[in-house]
Image (cartoon, rainbow, N blue to C red; front, side):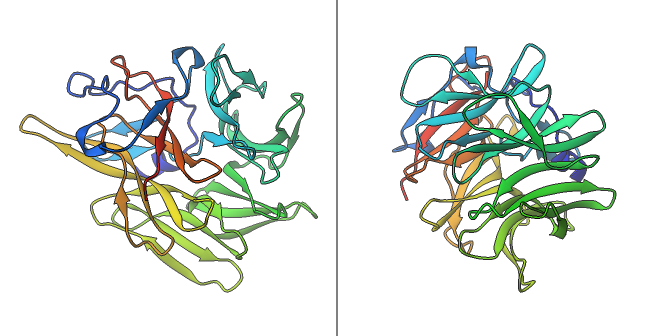
Amino acid sequence: MKKYLFCGILCLICFVGNAQQVDYSVVSVPEESGIDFLQVTNSGDYVCMPTVKRTRQGFNWLSNRIIDISTTGTHIAYLSYRNEATNIFIKELGKQGGSVQRTNRKGILDFNYSPDGKLIIFSENRGTSHQIFQTDANNGYVCRQITSANQDYSPVYTSDMKQIFFARQETNGTSIWAYNVANNFVSSYTSGMNPCPLKNESAFLCTRINTEGKSEIWKINYETGIEECIVSDPSRSFTTPSISPDGQWILLVGESVIASADFTYRNTDIYACRMDGTELAQLTFHAADDLSPVWSRDGKYIYFISQRGSAEGTANIWRMSFLY
């Protein structure tokens, strides 16, 4: 079960598990009253849906980040599966029309924009390994390789662009590593995945699996060595932390349960909490899986991937208002 959370598996176009019990066709449910939802993509964009696995033994999902907003806030980048390959495409927000292909690879797993908006850094499945590359965010297909011959994914720059944090899967688990841009030195820090560096602080947030098999959100100060658990729940897992532009909130993917007289259905929803883990709030309640959330650059909206609004369970990117 733990390995499934860690693995960088090629994304699926859509997921229709338990379709006979779940109605994806509605855009929102009563518990989401007051939230405005806007569909950003359409079926012709072939948006990848992070893999969700439901078994009798457990419930897991791919927690890698597969959408991001440009630093200008005018474009959204996402993973799309076309012509038997998974690549990064970019779509202009607020306008109708197609997307521009940004990479020409085979199996990209996840990615992020650099803080200055000039680069996109990504991981790719390369045979038996997952390697990290970077490319120009606006022009050409030329890529620079950052790591090799390992299981590396979830790369993200620090705000000063001096380091690239990433997760590396090893025999004994997954840990957070950093690549020093100036000298190409690679160093290991601590166990975890989904690294999210903090601005103006020598620290990052990450996801860790506890002894009960539930994932938690931790804050790691890599200068002092202080490690603090921010979000933990004995009945739910949380992954994919992302910090709001004003530095006040953490955006999360979390586990939830929908129960009725006929069945009990576990799925993924979007949550938010304060930086210290307080005021944890569930933001979405739809029976569809809501995954890979990112903030708009002004912090007023959240973009995420979901099958909501599609009777066929087709994945699209949605925008929701953040009301807190």
